[in-house]
Image 1: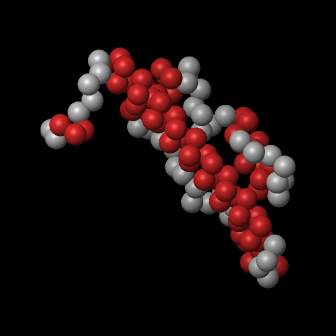
Image 2: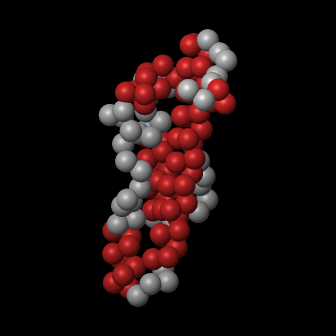
Length: 108
């Protein structure tokens, strides 16, 4: 293994670093998904009526998939998030639903 990728930490400490990295990546994903939904909603208002309605119907399409089937993500959820998947919680779902209806006053 290339020494520049070597981490000088014990296993528990390295594990925590990885969980913190996953947490930051999840926050980035949520932010980007919010931006996509917000922009799709705005774009729908500039399209011909039929196309705008179709875009609103597909406003959540092709966003990130589920990571829960991945063992590393399951460990992250279990150990770092007390068993609560940050991509699947009521606050985030409500936030995304509000954005999909044009509510600009909210943010994560």
